[in-house]
Image (cartoon, rainbow, N blue to C red; front, side, top):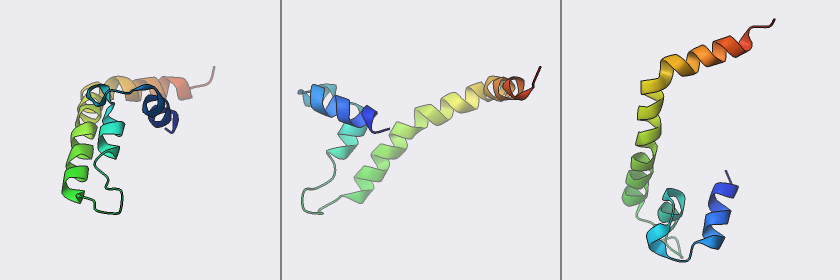
Length: 72
């Protein structure tokens, strides 16, 4: 999702209002000095709400996919 990264990167000037992707990007070092444990931990924390939401609404999501697959 390039637009979800580029537009906030260009528009947001205050680091307090960065999105999750921008905050994770700031963890990468300029010359390859990356703290991979912090980067992966932040990505897992960013992924958790999406997984929990999917698990809670899985029945409705699958019913919607199945209903949309039927012709007629």
